[in-house]
Length: 365
Ligand SMILES: CC(=O)N[C@H]1[C@@H](OP(=O)(O)OP(=O)(O)OC[C@H]2O[C@@H](n3ccc(=O)[nH]c3=O)[C@H](O)[C@@H]2O)O[C@H](CO)[C@@H](O)[C@@H]1O
Image (cartoon, rainbow, N blue to C red):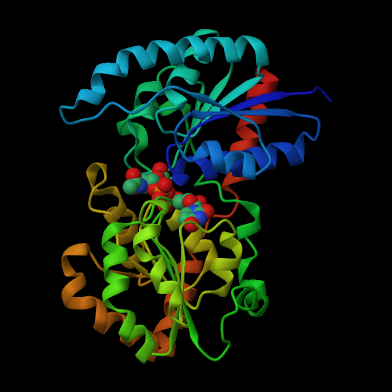
């Protein structure tokens, strides 16, 4: 078996990093001698998260183009040229057999140069409304793995393969060990555990909501694992002093957090939604209203319409949250129905299918 070399590029947020890691893990399983290099943006979370997963990463000096008028845009052309040159060097030195992009601005220059050099390439799009980097790359790459139907609106039809979103393998069996998981967080077995997730960066509005409902959680005998985001940790860490609250900047072991949870409050980023279907617990989605085409609201609505989750928009939190949450805690049947229904929506084979497509590119070379 050849010693294949793969470059994976994507980042900025967890929603682009973790799909790349899931794909790399499966490639490693199939091609144990393969070598891997990740390429991200030098000042973003992938520089910390990717090495934690055991892979090397190179950072490009690149940032997104601000849609609103901003001085930051002045350095954009310079950064782009520097990143294109750096990408060329990386590709020359590493000589990958296939390059894989999972979105986010760091993948732009690398995939652009790779396709110009005729290196086989594949991108994975997590959302129903594609990010700008993948839209720009679509005509240049060989294959585009998507998670939603209807993406012919944006991408060449003959390149699209509908696979679903890749999910890290350790999340596939999360239901099996709730007792150990609760123990690992030192949680009480006779109380409900609420897991609060603000997406990979944390969510200001969700943090405010949790803070203003701490008394409710205590009254309902709920213990809270609260992932507030790195940016907000200093503001909220004081609540670690409460016996029933654990504040985390970021959860490095999502399998344990998902396993421990009885109820989950979450943003509706594409990978979070795909993971939550696999996890199969009752979820209240609070989508971010600040994303392109309101795609998180669409992600959440697709699930809520099947009676598989509760959806509360930020606009309605003040009015609806207390009642919806209290009802969910009180109503075992409702929790069970939501769990059963969301599980039916899980797509667990996406990573395999994407790696099959990468395998085809290796052969076609
Ligand atoms: C504000 C914003 O632009 N959000 C976008 C971003 O979301 P975001 O980066 O939040 O990504 P997702 O919600 O899709 O996925 C988050 C990933 O981070 C992991 N995780 C999260 C928190 C934590 O403490 N530990 C941890 O490991 C989750 O398990 C998951 O694998 O990318 C998604 C996928 O392109 C988009 O759909 C979102 O709209």
